[in-house]
Image (tube, rainbow, N blue to C red; front, top):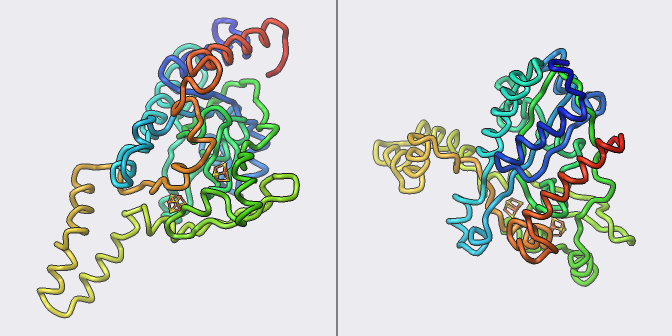
Length: 317
Ligand code: SF4
Ligand code: SF4
């Protein structure tokens, strides 16, 4: 490795870099594990044949104010994925410059040959295997016990970086959700999803047993890019110029053209109601920085100190 930097030390320099840029969580996923779990042709080596490590990072979602805003506003300001992508892009350059190993920012995009439901890589799987998120009852949204819902990005590198382990315990369902489930047969996310797209069960030990997610219902509610083919069909099926004009210029559709013209990310969003009522997200550091001992700054600094101790004592964290 360049400049005789040990892989554990390099890992901590990467962690420092992403934390300084605003990430909350950092982890490294084991490439062999990802290759076993990902569908054929969708493991990390499909993108970078000599990849040795997959680095995952998470940034916080909405601010405390965002969660108190009305549904329309939250749909515009709840997502922060571009910040995660920016940090990952910078990390790929940092790895190449500092350690001399090839690295890429993992594209968060859909496979152009497979349509709108098949991503080139699952950033969620990377984060899950890297131990910075666990699958929840809310449509598999990953949750972190301290940071709630985050947005993730990944970097692939040909450099070997010691991998982390997935979380030992899934924070979902929260104890208060188990209580509500026992009383009503529904957890808060199920109960407050406006289009009933979540269902599932909690076992007698209060663990997540089954989760069902109607992705089409969720997308119809919140992902406006899915509406575009239907608008085009309406235009082609229109019987006369007035009907065709309505298909193009109705107020709802005009908003979609506007978003397209300015490249607004809100064509692809969530309605967020499942997370607005999720006790893990609503008690996270980002939302209630003083609710947990020491607050956000101390938590991040504790994680850093623990990692430093691990290096000094030779423990593989
Ligand atoms: S984002 Fe909205 S529609 Fe989708 S699962 Fe959550 S509450 Fe339901
Ligand atoms: S509300 Fe949150 S913690 Fe509770 S079951 Fe749903 S996703 Fe899990």
